[in-house]
Image (tube, rainbow, N blue to C red; front, side):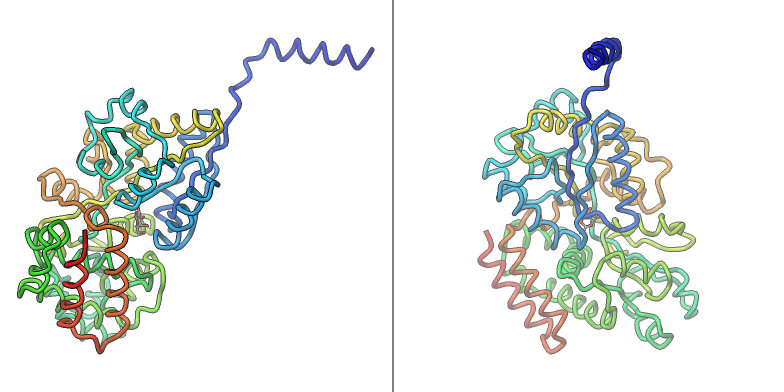
Length: 411
Ligand code: GAL
């Protein structure tokens, strides 16, 4: 009797309470494991938990090259996560075409995304037949030289303002025991550096002729030869870096062990997290100080199709909140990227971020290589670039010839 009485008492108590809707766990996979990246993703987790759901963090170290294959095999192998980060590009399109990803157009329309996402073109890679399959988070760009002001002060030379000025300081930096250029060992980093050189030193026309039009003759041109020669400078200036992760290379610049790093503006999150200020502690040369152009890559959250109704609902809650202006500001200032919404107040952003925003808003922005080249072409290109960096006997001329062959067969 006593037992029955207790049940009656408990159910009466519960009936009077407004229990929170059951919190739904949603596993989110990503490769944001550096200091700045972790601080940025923590802002998303905090905002999602505040909705009464639960962010289950699925961080995968090693950046895109390591994480992406794991994410793709889980989705294609029937063990999908609740949501995943991908850099916006043609690789996510292959999953969409396979029918494995959720169409979230209803969320996009309910929240009027098309009214404020800029550049809307960045969405092309996750819009199929007019349907939207990703929640875009930011705009990143690769065309930056991050310079340690202290390293140049140590050797008594002015902070370089262009790529050529920087290259000329190499011998003095080395003589002072400072690594001239820091470049992590993962293949994607040298690949990104090449893309940055092509646009910054080759210019927007050559860049689009090669990556968009797949014009092999342009690859073999004298203008392009300058880019391949500059990439040979990268090889010699970065020899001896001996770190793997991009943020370890950034840390060499932060601690003045290296003079500079060519990196995407995700590096900015590391400087800010280290308490360094652009202008006083470090300098950022957009377009390597040569061409005022950037290529727009970016990150987005994609949603695998799930059987679980509650988790599918939670996916929609997450998609909507990622584009909330407050979440956009909190995430992007820590990430070092430009918000994907053009109505977010970024007046408090760093001088470097302001440069990126102005370039973007001036329209000097082109699609990144991962949006113009197929995964197959990109892996051939990455293999060739990795081989070049590791093999000093390969001349820039040979690299140019072999690169032209890859582009000749690209689709
Ligand atoms: C981007 C990401 C950056 C960095 C970069 C290279 O998509 O936002 O934080 O990880 O890829 O992996």
